[in-house]
Length: 414
Image (cartoon, rainbow, N blue to C red; front, side, top):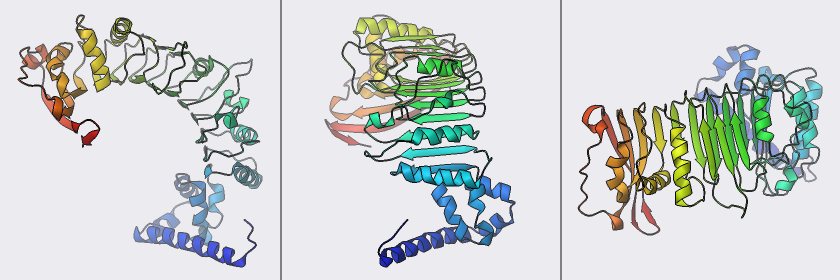
């Protein structure tokens, strides 16, 4: 940085010295410094890899031993309002470390007015360096600025193991398709793309993908999200109901025979298909199953529950239970004969439905109830006359938690 006023430079130096002294004091107080210095460089650089690059550089002031050690750290992490500064730093870093490979690269752009011109090229350079963990995100509200931020070469990497993209734009996959043979973890959050099949193409090009997270926004260009994978073990999807474009329909299909855990928070899809989930062990459901009429929702819910018959551990939210309760009036829902652990969030007004709800879990052993207590709407003369089968034989533990008490509209006591 350049300073026209010497006083500004003195203040900056004093600030840096203070930061370094605080860092040193923390290390000394923990009796960590001597132990750290005794470690080999390769191990120290792995420790520094856990720090943002800005903090890693500060360790160069600790001693002569640490002066240039941060340059050997196989990873970079930045949080910046100024992409040009990051680009210049990375160019210099690569010039000093010619031929070296990066294990980890993370960059987050903050602010509304950042200029991301040229950013795609240096991210491409990071991918070409054989990076294993890539994390690119932006908090800018001007989403057009992030269009095509992620370079096309990201679709063909033999080294990527973990990929996280948040609020950025992706270029369309090339004609040769997607080839990510080592990718095991993928997190896609509020991405923009012109290709409606982008997620499906990414999944098909990841033969060892185990962990997938997809956070969607109402205006994304993926009306039909298809998750089809033989090796996927964990899947999380979030599709909030903040807005919905009139006349636009959404659908989701999950076909993953090896899936063990699913977190389902999709409120906008009016068509939900889950199949071949025979390995599913745990499911976390927080959804109202689209915006359709109750009659249509009943069919969606029935198909969804029939698609997860082998689940053993279920977490279910109050909004989902309210929808289920409305459907239960028209007949019983699917029984889960393998489920032994259930965590459900209940409003006290709906407690009378609890016995009927528990009838669907004949082998339940552990029950956790998170209660929302509505003081003004407390049910009077509540009588639970139906005894679920699980209470007669298998239930071993019941835990009741009061999540919050609502005395009047708009007032909540934790």
